[in-house]
Image (cartoon, rainbow, N blue to C red; front, top):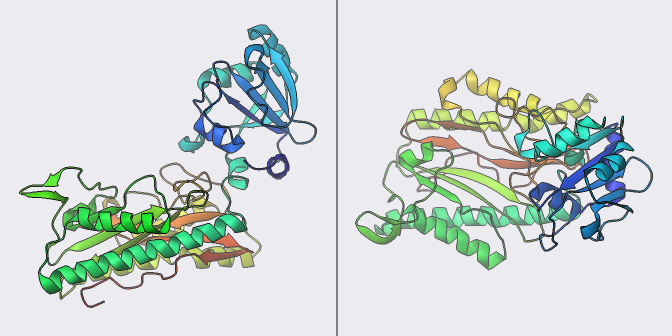
Length: 395
């Protein structure tokens, strides 16, 4: 949990009167995460926690669960029924309160409709807390940034060792399946103490044209114990992997390889297109900072998307440019997104996000991904190496 003072700084920066949290039966995991609350407490009644821009926080709790927020600082106010709850909440009528509800960013809209209507009916002016989250959970301090870069180094090692296995399979004619490389990556994670919320994406050939391809759980047809597609010559290979240390921030990278001796000109040209699009973001952020401006996630997505659309059919572009990264892989911070969930939040100091343009076709896809963190007013790429050329059987 962030300190109350950190919450207050965010509230003031967003020109709000306070931040209103509430939960019921632990249904809102984001609220529990933001406040550092575990699922071990009994929560059968609605509770409300309000951090004002100044003054003591207020805990509004049911009388049968009056200790549920004891881990948090603030004044305790108990209620027993709807009328007494409304009386306590009425004291905040007319104040502009950040809540977890946003008309554009669905992942941050965890406030239930019943509570929203309750607060609104009492005259509390409900505002999106997306900017507040960006300034608290959505930024990396020095400690989290260090864990992020350490995780990025392990991910890079996993990519290189997996590609070495690809090269070895062609050198000695040993069959390799998608599941083999996925298992290798996961074993490296375990060796280094990393955890992940989902196994890496390993996709061969046409499977790489599916942005969120999943290696099948069952064995490959006719090959007991093997999972996924067998690696063949003249195929695009897509790696996408993400992991973190248990108390750290995620890293998330994607690399692309090709298993043929001669790379088709169409693959080479399209690869160069996504690499060029990816590398437009960091310079644009630097240029804006130099001019005294701060770009939004929306604007960065538009920069990349405009370039891709000038070179690639729109149907091949299936997703936004990037997502926020914090202690969750798809974090609560700013997304580089102008089309799915348009994100107009600023890329402020401490922001960390992926830049991962991708283009997809029936027979293959190409997605490159780096992570960028704003450090001391500079966009820093955290990967130990940035892919500039396709991985090949010679490299």
